[in-house]
Image (tube, rainbow, N blue to C red; front, side, top):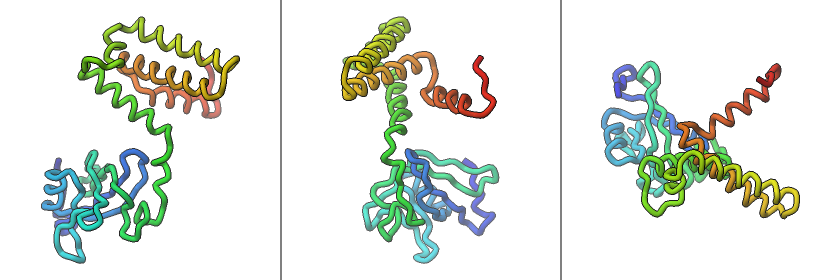
Length: 206
């Protein structure tokens, strides 16, 4: 990755974003050494302008920022670092350095993407003894059949069952749909994008 550290005197700003919630947590600065250490240890390390030394976030508090990914901007002088934070990020005890709550961390909808990531890993590795692996081995027809079966069970619970069982069967349906989508090289996010399009004014059914 090409990073222009010289443009601003050896430092580049590093925007820290929660990989799951997408909330911005803090802003720090890195020099080449801090960047290299971040890559090496997998924990965000800044160059502290006040202490004039490298500073790994969480080295005293234990509230580390575990790196998920690092991207450079179009001018090669600003980093976007996605992390999984351990505990509050700010030294004041708040989730972010702006005193905001990292609220979306509690949003279960975000788990659907995480679940598909897991299913895709199963599809890639195909570990023995895994139910998901067995579905992939059974083939597309069986996967599609399972989606239909679970959808029918959800309908039955909606009409004659309980709310608790409806949630249970609906969850089974979503899981098997994600497996089916994965087998087709598709993502659950594509379903969300389609619904977004339909929500816009002027959308017409095909």
